[in-house]
Length: 210
Image 1 (tube, one colour):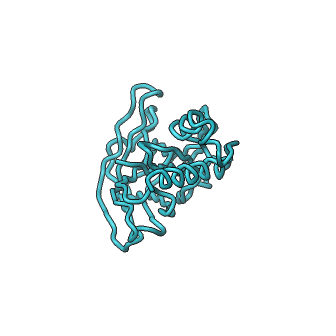
Image 2 (cartoon, one colour):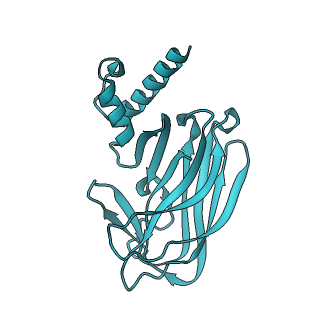
């Protein structure tokens, strides 16, 4: 039974690799397990560059990139600028805003069952004299399929001294992937500022094991 469960898990994970556009065979884990495990651990970006999939400790994890989020006024260059990193992933940067509203959703049936997860925004503050969002408070909300929700306030990160510093993870909430939580999960970052603010960069929302 354990061997059958392991095989089903591998088929499922290879299915995610194929969905992302990776060139793999459904039965490849049998004759080339090292390559499959390496791909799963390193992770793969979906071809539309809106999502990423990887496996951590045997469990499914996802990142939803900024282009896969609903960001109010992100189509207006006066408020938001789209930057591209070395991997071709687009990031959203606040040019100026007084109303920050970033929303997204995810279907949890893609996650591993009976596993604790956390949801976090991956952010940083642009290191320029015009950045004024460092240390500002924002409201975070996570709504789960079982009808419960979590709300909290958190501070945005401070300015980074170097562009290659790690991204800052702003945790929205935590949950257990139970049968009751199979469905659509929603998350948000919102804040009304007293004056124009600038400099926040959003790369993704990560849904990963704790």
